[in-house]
Length: 518
DNA sequence: CAACCTTTGAAGCTG
DNA sequence: CAGCTTCAAAGGTTG
View (cartoon, chains in turn brown, orange, blue):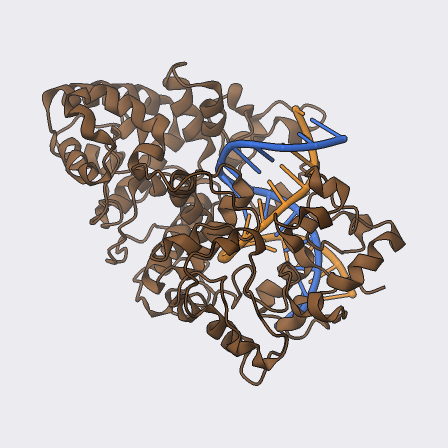
């Protein structure tokens, strides 16, 4: 954020095409969704692209703004009512949205809320609006309780109503991200055509298009499906609720894309990853909280769902490391050498294909591999006398001013493998100075009122301490880092499990980056 | 059209 | 319980 230059540079992938045409986030984000809204609110004139207007306009909407919008809303409401009549989940979702809204989650204090009409923001505030305003009630069904009573059908546990008062100023669309397949599907179907195919696909993304048959899904309805040979196929795929970072990505992606004019998600994600680390504690807390809510909601909507369903779902993809990799998922040449040194990439890498250097075939990977692969992050292991966090902190220091160098080389220009690394000037990598302290955190500090069912015992219900993990490219032990310990030493540091940045992490790290010592 | 890339976090599985 | 694996989003790229 602050340090845009560095933040906008994907470690290896960045190819900035132009200086940054800053497009108003609000106009970029969820642009499809907004389109209709804008359509309805045309009279706003051309300034609608400006984020600052967003808030005002949002207010408009909520306040009943202009009559045109009002009319639009009315029609939308009626549409929703009819939908709601047949769709329990919709009601639930709306309820939840209202809940969040009334909890102060939604209104997005500081930030512009996209002026999308309620229908386009199905989860948000709709229920609240319906319940609290004089607008037509959504639910035909008798006692669909207004915001204060527990959600209808699926609710197994009462939803805590004393939601935290934290001011979660998260743009509305973020809150929409709740992964409720069916709802999205409904929305999609109701918004007739209009949307380009691509968008449509996205809308239904959380449910692998299976929604076609019946509108109600959820765990129950899944079974309702025809018992075809493999019900799996028929089952609507209920996706995992998004985690904090995913929510963050969803929100920020458009912004980053606008700023960087990058399109490649991999690159964007790198940037986002760094930004995430640079994010303030409170900011992250918002997302953690949001994610937690999403999980809660997800649990309520799909009590029987477990992520296992998705994992065992099988066919999905083998993804990530192939079995024959021997677990070596060392990142490819691209990551190691950067764009600058494409000459060093293996051929497939140059063609964006799978890196042959690491792709297994027993021996093959070796030569190079030894060089880098073993990077075992484990490395983090011990960093120096100070915890590795330490070195990492140091390295993050001054944000490198934009270093164009970054774009290619990416990694810290000089990170020493040893403890001394801590001094290494980081020329890069990091996001912002502050991050060092922040990243590891999570919202511990925040005193949430809500105790989610699942939340870890005592820890202030904070999400488990987020893995102390170096942002990409900052970890000298990270094999992705061309100048990593391993890269430099050519040594294979077997990651003897033990010390990795964090448990949670280690696994990941291991799975992603490396190892495999013959 | 599916898999890959890339990120972090959550959850399930395994030993 | 620690460690590992998979999936969630996203969109360009490739086979």
